[in-house]
Length: 140
Image (tube, rainbow, N blue to C red; front, side, top):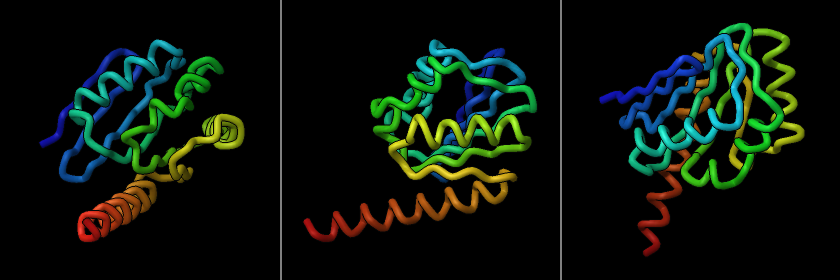
């Protein structure tokens, strides 16, 4: 079953089966309150479960420095397995590079030109996580 949330700035879709949250940013600027709201909605959709994420956006998406700083706090990554950023143009690649270099995500993060490639990588990261969790359970 897929759960969703949408407002005028972004859409969030959660697939429990895939442990995947997909964020789709619209042609608008994301600000700090949006990061807080996205986190609250993600926790609600996932019911606090571990998940991986794919971020993608329309062509004219942007994010404020305050929002980038807020989103890079460890609190927002507590349930995150890994994240993929789909970059469709130079502006998005620059935002992605800035986030990776200066905001330094604490979970595995990688950029991709297409969602299909991002999903393959994310699925592999989820499988790695599940195998590690299974190994932990077997040790106990």
